[in-house]
Image 1 (cartoon, rainbow, N blue to C red):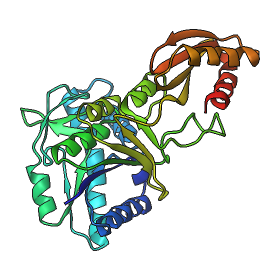
Image 2 (image 1 turned 90 degrees about the horizontal axis):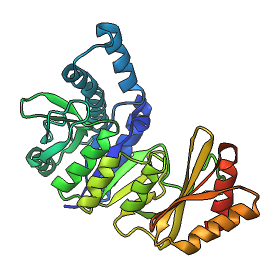
Image 3 (image 1 turned 120 degrees about the horizontal axis):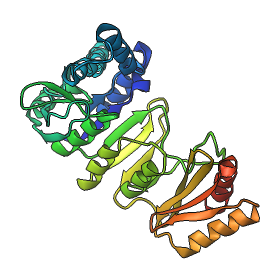
Image 4 (image 1 turned 135 degrees about the horizontal axis):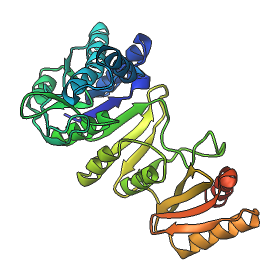
Length: 321
């Protein structure tokens, strides 16, 4: 039985039509002989709406425990609706809270860490032919209280379950097609990366590009869990995240602007002095007063005045990609 984890982001669950579309993706995988375990985020904007309700009900001062109990409801909402959509399409499905899926955490409300996962219930449901739909972002502590796993915590739910049931891959389905060589809105020539390493994704996060929850990527790296980031609105393959990644050299670029300074990072594998000099030369030839701030085997960062940051990003992308 080839089991996979399929995690849907909130943008893929924003309305009933999108939930039915997500359910159709799951059923397609079933027809291919796969056994999916689904992890869902709260619908888009649901968490903010719940926080707004909390502010109206209890003001700014509220307990962390009750906040977690409230926010976990968003993912449970998605899980139940997804299970209903699957059942409506003729499949057997069951929604599960984080606790029912066997996720035990510490008691750090709002940013809990996973202590262990007991996959017995998941395996039982899979064996019975059902599709488990797990509410992400949550678990239960030793006292039996609901806890949440921090911003983007459904990612951590997905990789933790992937390890617990030895899933062959952990798919993240969102509103983007994958990871790109640069932000496509800034660099029209940016292209989708087919394979990238955990280390490069972590470096991207540190350089200002939020791809996935950082804890989830580190967890996947520690346990060698293959990740795939792809779109729930297109059928094409996405970006695979593995230990090895792709070939050596510059894989992608990132930009981060703070105050009067923009920092453009070249991210890749086995980078060195030659890449640094090539970047500085390209900047100089373009009339951009760049200086190297940081260099390493996985990242070279150039700093420029903020107004010239995007120009440098496009210049270096053209040279290295």
